[in-house]
Amino acid sequence: MSATVSAEEFLANVEGGIVPVTCHEDVLRIAFIYLDEGLWTGNGVFDVVEKLHAHSWSFGEGELRFNRTLDIFYLVQLAAAIYRYSSQLEGDFPSFSDFPTLYTAHHALLHSSAWRSYYSTPFLTQRTTARFYRLPDLQDLPDSSSPLCQPRHSPVSAHALKLSRWAYTVGCTRRRQPFLPFVTLTTVALSSLEATIPRLQTAYPSVPPYSESHARFWLDYFIPDPSLSYLAKVTSREIWGPDSFGILVAQGKYDIHGLEAEYLAEASGGEVAEGYGESEQVTWCGLPDGGIGEQAWWRGCEEEAGSEEVVEFLAAVAVEETVRLGLEGIEMDELDLSIRSHILLAVMQAAVKNRQERELFLGELERRMVQKGRIGKEKAGRWVREALGIMEPYVRVWQGVWPGVEERGEMLRRILVENTQLLARWRVSPLSKQFTFELGPRD
Image (cartoon, rainbow, N blue to C red; front, top):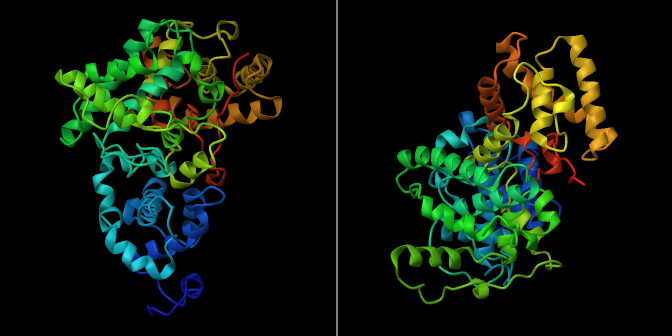
């Protein structure tokens, strides 16, 4: 490509098929042009991935072609390189002619195998990961564990967000669903984490092994005691809205590396290293935040589907909430339809019924969901039908017979783990064309 070709000419040539797109660097160059506006408007990397896919461009090959997570990952890495190039955008935004220099300077973030340092192959090839953007399971994204546009410390850990995000989810779940005893919720959280982390750590020794003391450190931070005194400081928007942990970190609400340093000092019996301490090391801008929250979303700091440890926890909570419901079958009066897991279990039972019984059951379910006030009448029908479409293929093995508590619980857990959109704890880009299973707050 001639050095004198402008961004507009290059884009017109590749979009028009005049210049072929033959390699990873070509796709990066195109994405760089799209990001020129994408980092400032709309949905950022989530808009840009749709533009790439519309022209049949993808960073992946074979089974990873059009993998949503992989393609957005490279857009996120490119955004990180742009921010680093311009000192968190305090300097000049790099121009099209700067791309070769940018690519060379940040090759470690951008090369065609960079994803292997961030994503395990089993995680990246999961159906959910291919359909929804998920954050890496091997290490944090560059700069994602530090406040945006503030001085950055050297990371204490490349996995600082894994446990903190998990513990934040546990804390919000405790406030959002106070039906399980505090001890039960904590037990479910730790046991699901203990089952998840070792699988990853065995295959990837660089991942820190499971540590109950480390997990409890973060749980104590987000849930210091059963009185919920700390959680009263968490806003209703955080509790009931889609997960916003990455945005809160970008705003500076949580000094992740400072807290990690405190844990490491506590665990070793030493003192916190100089430069770290309580959250005074960063400044939380809060709301209004001058656009930090939007910039964090545009950069891909927030996921569209949760990590394995978070999903396993939420699925385990759903099973625990439904374990004591009817043994032979579930009557509508037994259900508390302010609880998502009860709604999902009802849909699963409807999938087992014959067509006539199913329609009557679903009609009553929709009516009662609306009565509970967590969803509007205009959305209830589609919500239920979309959930039914996901669950029906799973329960065909039961051949119309409602199973016992243990078997149905395991099936509910499997459905939720493999279809995390049913948990609806994450914001999905409106361009993804995926149905959102959001419910409103309880009264």
